Image (cartoon, rainbow, N blue to C red; front, top):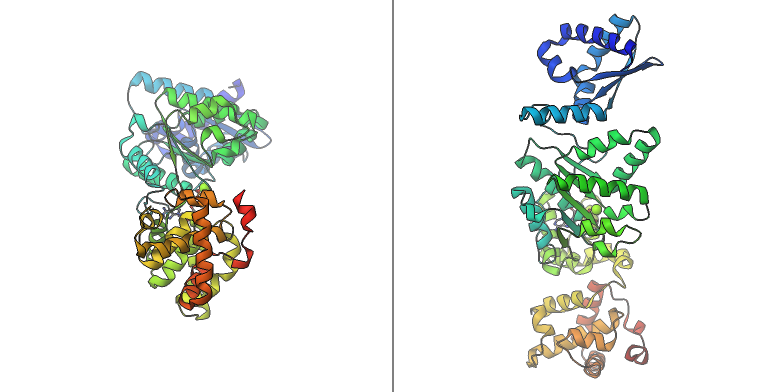
Length: 465
Ligand code: ADP
Ligand code: MG
């Protein structure tokens, strides 16, 4: 601190003690410093973000008044985290071996701009086979802080609940360990803050903020792709935290090794703990999500509409929720009845979003549902008569609605040959020509699966290659 600043600051401190009392002064102001008085701004250095936020909220006006009395003019008071103060505070705490109110704030700092969605809780997360592992890892880590679950990396494509799980983790962790500092940021926010710190020459402050946290949770880590300096910084943060056994949870769109444009060292670190994949939800999970969401919205949803939604939106929970909201909105705003037929009509324009993305799995699920069977029965090798027709229907639809070759389709139906898929598929085509009930079934299934038209089916020759 420059000499002038020292004397001003001493005088301001003496002045403010009278306003706020020695106890509060001791707790909040004593460990701060006056860095500069320039351009009508008094810049006060503070040890960490938490103290900064607290001073901003509670003592800024008192400080401004004290400055006015000491200096004789109005100064705007601004705060900035100071790396030296941060280190001093840590050292003195280590020596004391105690946890002071300041070092372990009741409500620790969460980097600004990254608020938590209160709806994203573990309770509201519908657990099914494709997301169970990720859910359990996040849930157990929040409960137990088990070292062997740390670091945790969750990955999967867009709209499958990664952000939901991260927010749920943070909320649950804070509830369980209210005296720890938990920082949740999107990777974009981390990068932006880092770039701003670089520009202002304040990377020390940036570092102290991130390395001071007990738990760091970073979403959309693939955002680091191609950003070398930010990757390096994140890697250092990661290393600094993990060397002190701090908890790190991250989410990204692919397995670490498959994130492009990112340094191997960082990818290795991400893969060094638990990696948990979230797969697209299966039919049961989708149905569960639709029901849970409708219940949350206090809306009564007929089973047929719930099924239609679960059959139609197969790859993305966000789209599934969007579909539900759309149907509900048409019902409540435009008075459309809430049944399968109108829901199908309302969603007709959404077909584009699912067309071409129908999977064999969803086809099998829809066919199984239609015939009251299980998916496993449809794909089994069993030759029971009652299973033959549904299985042939599923193969036919797989040929119509997916880009898989006859061989690939056969492989998913108990390892059948391409010839049997072709045979099954032709048999269904012929039968539908004379059996109107079957033709109707095919139309309905094509509708729910978003499979366009039979005439669009690729030529056998192309599929055989
Ligand atoms: P991601 O981060 O993987 O792109 P989100 O976490 O943003 O996906 O999820 C998209 C939407 O789907 C959110 O509204 C989320 O609450 C919801 N969602 C995803 N998976 C589930 C689930 N298993 N149970 C309930 N809601 C879910
Ligand atoms: Mg997300």
